[in-house]
Length: 481
Image 1 (spheres, rainbow, N blue to C red):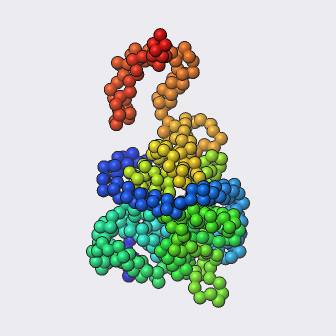
Image 2 (cartoon, rainbow, N blue to C red):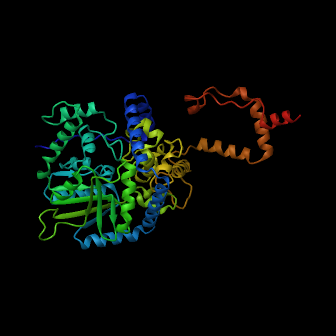
Image 3 (cartoon, rainbow, N blue to C red):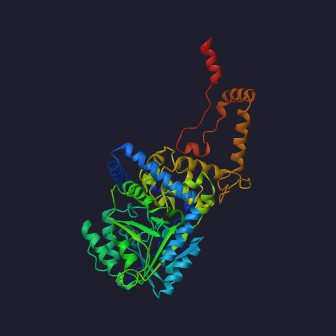
């Protein structure tokens, strides 16, 4: 069966506000997201009936992630040494371009023109499919959700459930139109069979399989892969060459660190006590073994993670285990959906990690895509203080571009407005002295009739601001007479 190649749709994050406005007008999509988020919230809640157990597990997970990040350079060197000793070839990539070039080189060296992929958000992050297609190499997603969005020529709208924005009827039409010989049916089991049959026919043709990594264990040199469909195991064992790609922050120190993080991940992500498959990859096929890849490669990607690591507060961003719980509980994400963000990682976690990957100049609106209700921080299984990090990134976005700071972020000052900054300086000056403050408030109350009816973005959805007829001090003085 000849692979079907579909062009991906790229969405620059700079257009967030326009896409969010459009998404809010799509009532069908809003209904789909609301239903899916309610379902996932209920599933997670059912997995954590004991609040004390949940909080103890969160404390343990937070401690593990913080300890491993505090030793990150050392653990990465240990991981490389352990993997190399087992025959795994480790590659380092600072940028998406370098990662793409490494992977393309490995595919070409293997003599292949088809790559079967397990679920990997990092490969989405570097736009791997697009890069390989430009060089005549076809990459086919084997995760069912990823396969659906690839057929549709779209990007994932959720990091755990990539096709959550699509209805059953839309998927039925998509399969009927894009998969040769597929009947038009909305039966879920039949749709799954159609997808699996189309993908599994390709495994004998692929010389290269690619996967992500959920945890990379430095102590033992083990790559852990969490999945439900078995496609991850197929991608990592059937082709002759297995390429794993992950961000540098996924390394953990000990094998014993994995069980608590695995428990937090599956219960927070899909409301499962465990996933159907948990793969532990420790090297290529050895002499005497009948199956498994002949080569295993690991690509470790930085892509801005070192920037977050260098800042003591922002380092908490790297604690993420990619469960998506923050997205499932975010009132903004539930209304605008994942595509509105225009980034690989949408929702609250995307708003704090994307500025490091893409620069604040491309993501300046994302930290403001939050009501700061705190739900994301309350459900995070490793206690990332997401609201605090959103506020910090807002501050960095409006900071003067030339202001000297200890750890400047890429794109610092992207949302800086010198006129607005001048207004705030005047505001601070008026409020710094009691006499100035009283004179200002007296004058404001007497001239309240001069307030404009249109006040920039404020009056788009609200009534115009207008000072009270009298100051608070005047009203208190009147009551005391």
